[in-house]
Image (cartoon, rainbow, N blue to C red; front, side, top):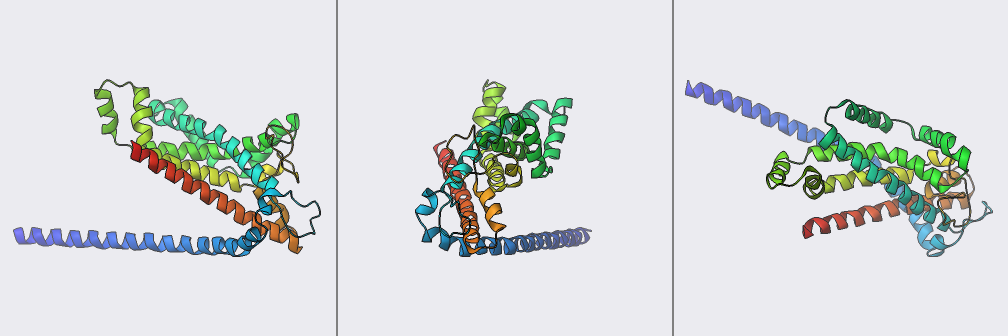
Length: 294
């Protein structure tokens, strides 16, 4: 009898091991399938855009956009400044609100009617096309107050909000329950437990979700076509007046067949990828330093 049981256990373990190896192989294959087009896209942007940016450095980041579209040369200073300002304003609107919404959904709302409604709406908003957000902000805000960077920031914030809510809620679910129980056992209130125990434990995942939302917002073009207008000189007041961004300039220059606009389009694409990469690395370094200090 013991021999039969041992053989049955060996067969089950071998089958489980085989399934485990199969799933790992499929995951690795899926990773390669995703990695190949990503490498080709980034490689093309770097090969075609890096030379243009470094050729005109530093005037690429300081000079105004040429009014004559046929001419070659820099710069993209207004688009770089506009991208940073509008994305920063959209992040300031969406990230705190999204984190607070996720905290309510997981820590307070549970399965209440309001929490289910917010969770459902955030899931629906995740799949809404970006151009619909742009049209919504255009009708509600731009027609009344005019073209401005604030309108573009509102449209991008609407796109970022569901991503931040969903990713933060999932990270909060991964925090072990015994951490909360240990904090409650020490007499700490729920609000303080969330701010000092739960959120710091989920910080790396929350930062990843926020960076994903910021990267999506920085690369969006459709919502900005109806909200920010277009300028060729740097406009620092993001709250009023037309503005421009790198994504808008990529769209505008890529539609031209002349060498000058094509060069500026590739250079703008490389600049946008570089800005996103730099801010991702900085956010990771700050998060790692904060966790080490704790």
